[in-house]
Length: 90
Image (cartoon, one colour):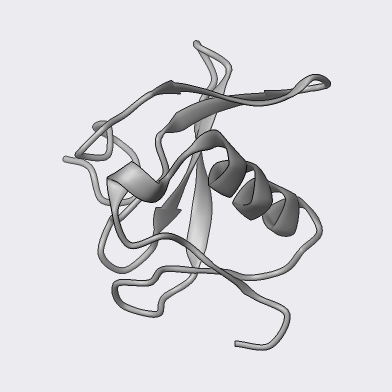
């Protein structure tokens, strides 16, 4: 996809550097594409904790939860399933 950014396929590759690149592209309005099914990724927000993650709208593949503040992106936790009430959660 032109001007889009492709997310890593594995959780191990979702390091701070990669998540920062994905988040920057998302904030610039560029599409972030899931490497597993080629769907776009959307932002999920945990307002109580002040955390974000990008999650595929098709298959649920996601980045780890992270905070995005002035000092940059900081990974806060891994999650194998979306939380209840999110795009793919129950």
